[in-house]
Image (cartoon, rainbow, N blue to C red):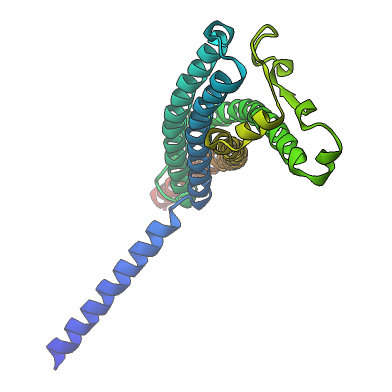
Length: 283
């Protein structure tokens, strides 16, 4: 009976030890950084994937309906191909950068959780945290520009879609449908000498009914939403990094204070011990 009770107590202690270990591991997870990383990965993936496919569809629409001469849209094609390569670079960079920021979140969380132990933050760690704050701020400002730029094709496609919807409305019967046109040359996408350069009436309606137009329009919307999600993620990262840098600074000051306090206590103990030895020698 005694051996069974001892075995039960050992099993309970093992269960408590595993439970406490799990709680300790979960307590060291930087949940804020984890949420920001997931949001950043999702936003960049939506922007890069949808933007790449939407740019390809845009070239197809221009070559088929608005600029049938290759030399007229050659420069635009080169720019779109360059933007697609830039998208590859953006996806690769933010994949690595998100992992680095998540690792920095784990490091800072462990540093804050163990303020009163032997773990000490170094000057190099604080400098790296400060560098991440500065770099994330620059990337956030840049992504605000990307978000605004990604809204431009959404605006252009929305104009075409609203024009096609206006032709189908009852009010369009009062005017000649062929007089309703969309001229993409006025947006500076293709030069003014491009032929035909514009689409009117039933031709415009056929363009709006194509799968390339429908898919590109909605992909641009999703890409714009992805850019907005990335901006939010970078702002979230900026707040986290700023707070972590402040925590690391306080941790270093706390450790410096503890070191000074320990030295003073040791000196006081040495003085008291010497005074006792002197008294003992006199007596």
